[in-house]
Length: 249
Image (cartoon, rainbow, N blue to C red; front, side, top):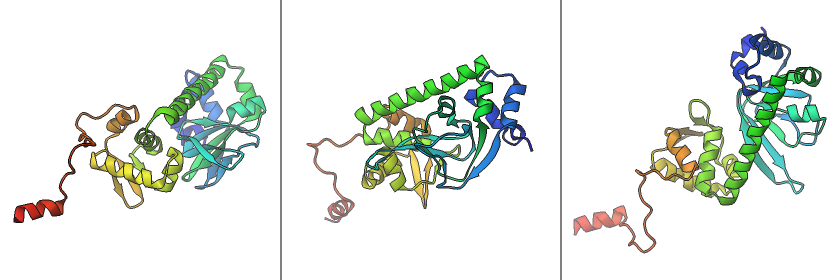
């Protein structure tokens, strides 16, 4: 089956925006379909890209590893997003690792075909727009790491990891690495978000139930309905045991 028929959702990806429908279908139909299991690398930092990769299904973690071995998660690419096209056109090594975080299907548009396609001004414009969006995202991420709270970074990470059904299957250690804090801090913040009715935690699954609320927190906008934090000078609230003792007296 042709890729354009098998993955029609990719026809609406940003990099194919405003192209004639026959050209969009032709680009996808010339792609090689590749399947990667969870944990497999699609692209490796320092190696060459074979062309433009469309994420057709699944989720791909994009991360960089420093010379001393520290890993920084940059983004999680979902269906319709692309990877590797800039390195392929520039003939430069990949600046990041791209790893399937769940079983993923990608469509590879080989470099020779990519060079032919960039002769189309609209397609070239789309590539530039996609990379402009990446620059905006990366700048926002740098600002967040510098100025935001753990809560803001966690909410942003959860929204990025969530599927359309709002479910996250990554463990807390993985989330801690992505947020840039300890697992204990993630566990504490998740408990707070759960108490505020923004998510629920189940066995091996985090389910987001109030995405607008999480987006507001990620942007630093406090929910007016959220319980106020106790003042540092306020007396401690009685524990359930203390309350029971008072009733029995």
